[in-house]
Length: 312
Ligand SMILES: [Zn+2]
Image (cartoon, rainbow, N blue to C red):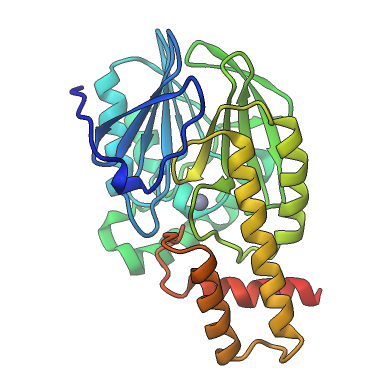
């Protein structure tokens, strides 16, 4: 795989902690080199709706984290994984949202020997809703969507130890937060946390699951537990130290909830005019944050969802 050093511009401002070096190895990938025996390759299609998959590349094997939104990006993951040329220990699905499982079938077909790992919650929801979700996504993305979603083949338990890419990772099951279930992976010797969508980095988050209160509580716990994590791998945006990403996510959620709460005092449900004010204030406070979903009205969807949540 040739290494091309590119501008950081495509990914926005990249926050890197001490001891973490980053090399871009293609338009849509970043490689974090974390000492002998482990590389982390980040794969996404930049811009609105960008979502990360990661390849953990160890000395003798690799693991793939998350399955992309469509088959197009999933095939990029397959190509990179094949290029590394090592057996795949496992494919891990972090949560039940389709931007992370839409392309999963492509990975499962490419690496049929690799188990697909997910929490009980994630597995249940993907089996329950996967087909209907893909059918809807086909109306948006057409043939870029695979026809099926594979059923996870192994259920992960909270606190379980996994051997991935030659290192021990501990499963931390969180949620409800951004989604109902959120599987994180912690590698203590290298100070790495795969945080999935517990955090994003300078992105407009998905608040439509109406759990921002529970999400804030999870972040409060995680920011203490993972205060020393240098390389936190988010579901959307660039890697950065965990504390920075978690504080950033808490600021966004708190700001947005306060904004919606203040508009709710005037009208319930929110008027179109109230949502216009919410959009303007949010973009002023968090300018240039791409949306985690390719929905031009994500801020308005978030506002309605948070209003419903706050109304209880
Ligand atoms: Zn996501």
